[in-house]
Length: 365
Image (cartoon, rainbow, N blue to C red):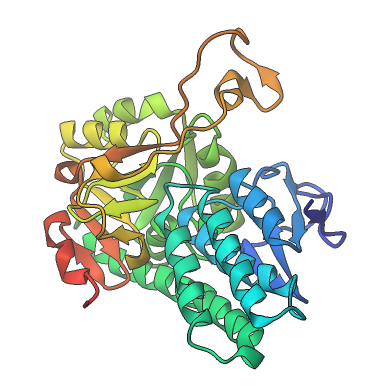
């Protein structure tokens, strides 16, 4: 099982300094192990866990110790290295088989997040291009490259996001859903990358954060990140968004994505589709911020995106507290799909694209 880091264990927000946005790195490689910020413990306790096996990495992804599509991809890349470390003295055929088995295990942990599949496949491709003697070092280097590239990608997304902000003599109010920040990436964030860039440029008055039921990533994680950087943030319940828009409190909506189909249909945390509908009803721009690795050109439309259904207890409880009869039936999809027609634009590290123009980002055969 994952081991808690003794360095960080029990460092509560009230008892010890916590990271600021410039150094929130949810996935790091430390002395042959992977250190993850345990996102199930935030905001009450800042704690890390040490991951030493690919099985533990798969469990950490499944249980959302690490979450957010780009961060899952980085974690999975390092998980492939961990799988190889378990059999370094074995014949090379055994090592390659271990990598294939690890790939299957990791891909099964969260079926919607396409970045996970992309990162694992990148590692398999890298394994096929290197000589036997340097396999481990080459895979570790590749995983480091994936992590560094994601951080640079997020910073570029933030910069491009400035171009979509409405022209206004006043500072703007942005609304976001779930957590697409530093915690969900290698650092900095996608949707929160746009927020951070707007704040740094003096364009942001306030960010409104949906609480994001049932796991409350907006309440627990997005607000925590904003507090670390002193970005003005107001927490609202999911069903307040339409009211806030009607009151003229929201200028633009920006969210992340776990998978974007070829036509621009976008899977993101459950509740995003409804948010896009009310944004359209109020004439408010609705943007998706995501790296190119989130684009899935093998899936023509959102109808083909697999939607993960999670445990009923996430809905039946808030933390350890039951909030509904235990015998009631529960439907708990983790994501919904926002049709491309509701999306004003998709902010990538390459620029901002209308959903209908995503084909220009398709890799050459």
